[in-house]
Length: 284
Length: 330
Image 1 (cartoon, rainbow over the protein chains, first blue to last red):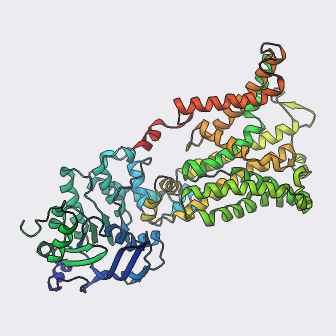
Image 2 (cartoon, rainbow over the protein chains, first blue to last red):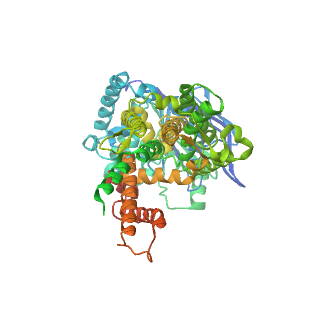
Image 3 (cartoon, rainbow over the protein chains, first blue to last red):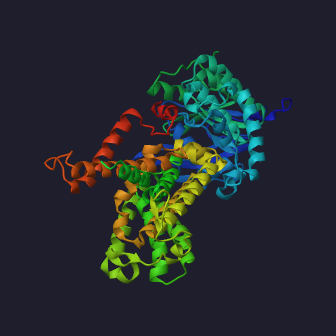
């Protein structure tokens, strides 16, 4: 899976402009608009997300990144426009079905299920469980084997994310960073083809950051597509193959990470509103 | 003081008819609120569905008793869940709370209306629908059983009730340890998280509402059988809140919580009732403080006081887990 990982290389020939077509898009967005009263939160003409690479979605505060994210995962419905995931129209598909199609998301405010143990959190992530039917759940012998298989997979993931020592603890007792790790590990239980991470680094201490970065890269190396929203420019710089910049609900720039710092539209967008984010994108 | 009578009355509360009816209602509520986080403030309407399902089938429509059981324990509560759940379960938890409390009052007021007299018996309710049940009783009607606690027919109702409570507890215990129960708990903790992992939260909430409703209906039906009448005033909102008190006393989201809670609730009610009554009669409490007719109210004041103390010193209930409760604050 390592040698001929073409997807990122294929982006080499793609022009650095907003809404540009990609050679192998997994997610295609067309004319998506979402307004809240008089405020147009998202107004994206066209966006394609390349399969098998890590794409970062950045932008100043209030740019509409999280709203856009909700629209892509059907946690919110757009006023207009279409979204296609892996060739399937997402219009009117309930959020849980989007997850079952292979696009799974995490949340900016981590949603670890506090009163459930870490391992139960993980087991929950497995989709299409036989024991999730009310009738079958009454007869444990019908689902026990599957439960064991899911538990083995969950244990392997916990080990990979270094949470195995917390296996039996309530998820509510984990630290903020551990919760981010748990949420990511739990998302992998779904066996997704595309992982959407909403600010995976928010509230994570520097020591954990590095391991989180490695985990995100690991997803790509296993062939998954990653789209993440992030404010942490170091992370964007280090792991993304492609960066999409949003401001005031629109996509204002696209390109490889090194190109973004020099983009005049991006500099304007950031310095015009807030400059709490470091902008030394081009020279590290 | 007649301590024999005190003991007898307290025991009747702990394991008797009221215990059985409200244990079932509270087990249903525990599925709704304890495991799924659904705020059902109308458990009385599910109980009424069970009672009227049977009573109307037999007394109004002249159907077979067993058809009545199916109507009361399955058809009526399932239809009711669908009516209340379809519009509200996609919304925030508060909307279900509003709809359930409204539905339970609407049902009661409609059932009471004189124009429906030939269907529901209006405020007199329906009677004479439980003969088949009592014909099956192995107990002698004129005998007293279990150290004289219950006469024959009561004993039969209570025994069937115990079996139903045990069955319901077993079902809940099995379900909660299954992947299905895990999804319910996930929905209680965070519905969006469950949806993001591919769970159809709406459908799971509907199933939980139905299952808890069916168990509540069993409680209501048994109550109608035990009192041999289905009357609107047996299903006033107080009934819902008795079930809530039982659940909170015993411990939310514990299989035994609602059972223990119902036993404590009616044990304490019966104990205070007979003790106060005897104290008033024997003059230990002078009639200038309280007379015999006020005993009924005073024992509810004592229950209220007990609840206040409980929420101050043991908010998780008798069986609840303190660690789980503490996680709420994070």
